[in-house]
Image (cartoon, rainbow, N blue to C red; front, side, top):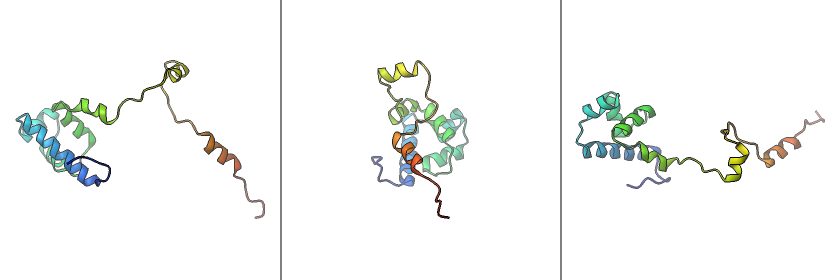
Length: 117
């Protein structure tokens, strides 16, 4: 099944879980072997493979690391590319917060107290 935005969260988690199970089986690992190598419990691995939402993301990452799947996250959330001008403006500093748009700051200036009350 292809993961698309119209799928429910539960369907996506089930699909990711079945893909993890397939990756584990492709490497000929049992659930116990993979769980021990990833440093998670067998029940955590079972929940990940079944797509249960109660699992922690850190356990998912540990399992993906053992299965050599972490590099694929780069395609999921690539590092943002800065233009050369933006790089010069930042001068090697990393952005710490979002900048308020001109539109939202203009709206903030228009608001006043109702003087009729």
